[in-house]
View: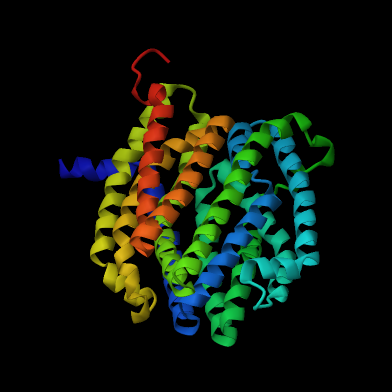
Length: 431
């Protein structure tokens, strides 16, 4: 019986991928721990809040530059990888559209650096140079997304994981060095440059393995394909703007109604959450989207969802329990004693993240099957609910109320997702 169990583990594709991917994630988490500790030591909760503001702005700018086409790239590469002409049309269309959009966003950022600095950091602090550097680094980030999207579509998971491991080590080293030398300016500089540096890592890894350049031809740009891709673009851009905007609004509301330190504590909890969710989010991007894109029936979709739930969710749930029990140690290790108030936020955040993963495993079907209207409506309702509940519970329960709002919103979202996909998940009639 025990031998059969180990044979099952050894032959399980999802577990093997999760195990290999976990190496990259663990390295990134260790790097994140070190950088969070450095930020807490040199910058405090206020500095952490400002770093969070820049990350939110930059993620929106990055998504706008790529036009949210990375998910569409993965889907169509996986679908057309044996059709050279269709493959060339996909790569060429996304490359040239991305080139012009990135050039436009970079120029706008560079020319409006002062206004952006005032928006992100307030009028008291002037970080115009940071915004200009971000504008210069942006094209390298987009090229990295483009190449890794192609690798993902081809199923080159090992190459992607190697890139991530090298990139995480390089990123953490550069970030720590910059924080040590220049404190807040160094931390902000790391935010805008580290992801761009990953392009050069990717280039070194793939230069002798894959050659996509012959497939990029201006004459193969397809407006018909662009129309199909536009649905992915719309979905990704909506989330890319909505998530940072709502996060920024909630953080500003916390700072205005409590103080900037409290906003920093909330950001600290978000960073911890991001670290352990990397194990799931990276696995979903690598495995679930390409897999769902190839599914043709409700039965196959239902089987894949249950497969993920049975294989990954028990491990994830156990991990959350361990994190909760070690929450005091985690906060002290990641930050310092002044951040111990973050301990009180764990319960609601961890429960909310469990419902989040339950939801997005199913919600990836929105992307795989281009269910644009359903996606936009559910996302819109989610973020409106999250923002309103955050304000409501903050007024009654203080900072802990925002994390309670996070849990309740994801519980409602999960119920909504089950309702939308009730036929695919629960109906036993013929597909």
